Image (tube, rainbow, N blue to C red; front, side):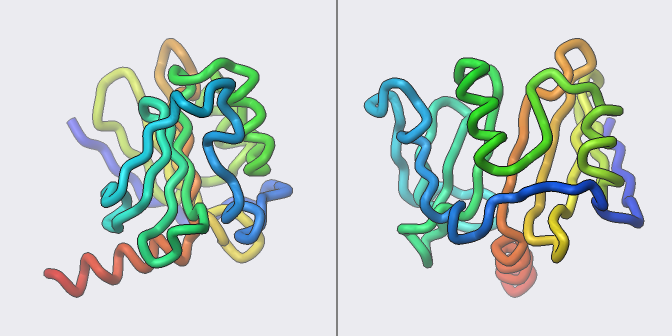
Length: 170
Protein backbone atom coordinates (compact mmCIF):
# COMPACT_ATOMS: atom_id res chain seq x y z
CA UNK A 1 0.00 0.00 0.00
CA UNK A 2 1.36 3.41 -0.97
CA UNK A 3 0.10 6.39 0.98
CA UNK A 4 1.00 9.97 0.04
CA UNK A 5 -0.04 13.20 1.62
CA UNK A 6 0.85 16.72 0.58
CA UNK A 7 1.54 19.19 3.35
CA UNK A 8 0.91 22.89 3.01
CA UNK A 9 3.58 24.44 5.19
CA UNK A 10 7.34 24.23 5.49
CA UNK A 11 9.84 24.16 8.32
CA UNK A 12 10.04 27.17 10.58
CA UNK A 13 12.41 25.41 12.95
CA UNK A 14 15.68 27.28 13.55
CA UNK A 15 18.59 25.45 11.94
CA UNK A 16 22.18 26.26 11.23
CA UNK A 17 22.25 24.51 7.86
CA UNK A 18 25.44 23.96 5.95
CA UNK A 19 25.98 26.43 3.08
CA UNK A 20 26.23 25.25 -0.51
CA UNK A 21 29.92 26.19 -0.45
CA UNK A 22 30.57 24.11 2.67
CA UNK A 23 28.54 21.17 1.34
CA UNK A 24 30.53 21.24 -1.91
CA UNK A 25 33.72 20.44 0.02
CA UNK A 26 32.37 17.48 2.03
CA UNK A 27 33.68 14.03 1.17
CA UNK A 28 32.61 10.75 2.72
CA UNK A 29 36.30 9.73 2.98
CA UNK A 30 36.76 12.51 5.56
CA UNK A 31 34.26 10.87 7.91
CA UNK A 32 35.10 7.17 7.82
CA UNK A 33 37.92 5.56 9.79
CA UNK A 34 39.15 3.66 6.71
CA UNK A 35 39.03 5.81 3.54
CA UNK A 36 39.75 2.67 1.49
CA UNK A 37 36.31 1.34 2.51
CA UNK A 38 34.65 4.02 0.36
CA UNK A 39 33.47 2.87 -3.07
CA UNK A 40 33.39 5.38 -5.92
CA UNK A 41 31.05 5.20 -8.89
CA UNK A 42 30.35 7.40 -11.88
CA UNK A 43 26.94 7.57 -13.52
CA UNK A 44 25.08 6.98 -10.23
CA UNK A 45 21.41 7.78 -10.82
CA UNK A 46 19.66 9.59 -7.97
CA UNK A 47 16.82 12.14 -7.99
CA UNK A 48 16.55 11.87 -11.79
CA UNK A 49 20.17 13.04 -12.24
CA UNK A 50 23.57 11.45 -12.79
CA UNK A 51 26.22 11.79 -10.09
CA UNK A 52 29.73 10.83 -9.08
CA UNK A 53 29.07 8.83 -5.94
CA UNK A 54 31.17 8.01 -2.87
CA UNK A 55 29.49 5.29 -0.82
CA UNK A 56 29.69 2.89 2.07
CA UNK A 57 26.64 0.67 1.64
CA UNK A 58 23.62 2.97 1.33
CA UNK A 59 25.42 6.03 2.73
CA UNK A 60 26.33 8.27 -0.20
CA UNK A 61 27.98 11.62 -0.87
CA UNK A 62 27.03 12.65 -4.40
CA UNK A 63 28.53 15.19 -6.81
CA UNK A 64 26.42 16.12 -9.84
CA UNK A 65 27.93 15.29 -13.23
CA UNK A 66 27.97 18.99 -14.19
CA UNK A 67 29.87 19.92 -10.99
CA UNK A 68 32.06 16.84 -10.32
CA UNK A 69 34.14 18.61 -7.67
CA UNK A 70 31.16 19.76 -5.57
CA UNK A 71 29.06 17.57 -3.29
CA UNK A 72 25.42 18.45 -3.88
CA UNK A 73 23.64 15.73 -1.94
CA UNK A 74 24.15 13.32 0.94
CA UNK A 75 22.28 10.19 2.01
CA UNK A 76 22.92 8.65 5.41
CA UNK A 77 21.76 5.13 6.23
CA UNK A 78 22.44 4.85 9.95
CA UNK A 79 23.01 1.07 9.80
CA UNK A 80 26.13 1.52 7.64
CA UNK A 81 28.44 3.45 9.96
CA UNK A 82 29.05 3.79 13.71
CA UNK A 83 26.76 6.15 15.67
CA UNK A 84 29.48 8.78 16.34
CA UNK A 85 30.13 9.11 12.60
CA UNK A 86 26.40 9.42 11.84
CA UNK A 87 26.03 12.12 14.50
CA UNK A 88 29.06 13.99 13.14
CA UNK A 89 27.67 13.92 9.59
CA UNK A 90 24.28 15.24 10.77
CA UNK A 91 26.06 17.95 12.77
CA UNK A 92 28.17 19.00 9.76
CA UNK A 93 25.00 19.26 7.66
CA UNK A 94 23.39 21.38 10.37
CA UNK A 95 20.39 19.08 10.73
CA UNK A 96 18.82 18.89 14.22
CA UNK A 97 18.35 15.13 13.90
CA UNK A 98 19.76 11.99 15.50
CA UNK A 99 19.43 8.28 14.75
CA UNK A 100 16.42 6.66 16.39
CA UNK A 101 14.20 9.77 16.63
CA UNK A 102 10.46 9.09 16.57
CA UNK A 103 8.21 10.54 13.85
CA UNK A 104 6.95 13.10 16.36
CA UNK A 105 10.52 14.20 17.16
CA UNK A 106 11.42 14.49 13.45
CA UNK A 107 8.31 16.59 12.78
CA UNK A 108 9.08 18.80 15.77
CA UNK A 109 12.64 19.31 14.52
CA UNK A 110 11.85 19.93 10.83
CA UNK A 111 8.25 21.16 10.76
CA UNK A 112 5.41 20.16 8.49
CA UNK A 113 6.49 17.82 5.67
CA UNK A 114 5.64 18.71 2.07
CA UNK A 115 5.01 15.02 1.37
CA UNK A 116 4.51 11.86 3.40
CA UNK A 117 4.93 8.32 2.03
CA UNK A 118 4.13 4.92 3.46
CA UNK A 119 5.44 2.30 1.02
CA UNK A 120 6.07 -0.42 3.59
CA UNK A 121 3.94 -1.30 6.61
CA UNK A 122 6.66 -0.75 9.25
CA UNK A 123 8.03 2.67 8.17
CA UNK A 124 7.08 6.12 6.98
CA UNK A 125 9.05 8.67 4.95
CA UNK A 126 8.73 12.43 5.07
CA UNK A 127 9.99 15.05 2.61
CA UNK A 128 10.77 18.56 3.85
CA UNK A 129 11.93 21.81 2.33
CA UNK A 130 14.28 23.37 4.87
CA UNK A 131 16.16 26.60 5.32
CA UNK A 132 15.05 30.24 5.23
CA UNK A 133 14.95 30.16 1.43
CA UNK A 134 14.12 26.44 1.21
CA UNK A 135 17.71 25.74 0.13
CA UNK A 136 17.48 22.01 0.75
CA UNK A 137 15.18 19.07 0.26
CA UNK A 138 15.46 16.70 3.21
CA UNK A 139 13.94 13.24 3.37
CA UNK A 140 13.65 11.19 6.56
CA UNK A 141 12.60 7.56 6.96
CA UNK A 142 11.32 6.45 10.35
CA UNK A 143 10.87 2.77 11.14
CA UNK A 144 8.22 1.82 13.72
CA UNK A 145 10.57 -0.17 15.97
CA UNK A 146 13.88 1.66 15.33
CA UNK A 147 12.96 5.29 14.83
CA UNK A 148 14.86 7.44 12.31
CA UNK A 149 16.95 5.13 10.10
CA UNK A 150 17.73 7.20 6.99
CA UNK A 151 18.22 10.87 6.08
CA UNK A 152 18.97 12.52 2.76
CA UNK A 153 19.78 16.15 2.04
CA UNK A 154 20.06 17.57 -1.47
CA UNK A 155 20.34 21.10 -2.81
CA UNK A 156 16.89 22.29 -3.90
CA UNK A 157 18.26 23.73 -7.16
CA UNK A 158 19.48 20.24 -8.10
CA UNK A 159 16.10 18.69 -7.21
CA UNK A 160 14.47 21.25 -9.54
CA UNK A 161 17.02 20.44 -12.27
CA UNK A 162 16.19 16.72 -12.01
CA UNK A 163 12.47 17.41 -12.14
CA UNK A 164 12.92 19.71 -15.14
CA UNK A 165 15.06 17.18 -17.03
CA UNK A 166 12.56 14.42 -16.23
CA UNK A 167 9.65 16.52 -17.53
CA UNK A 168 11.50 17.36 -20.76
CA UNK A 169 12.01 13.63 -21.42
CA UNK A 170 8.27 12.86 -21.10
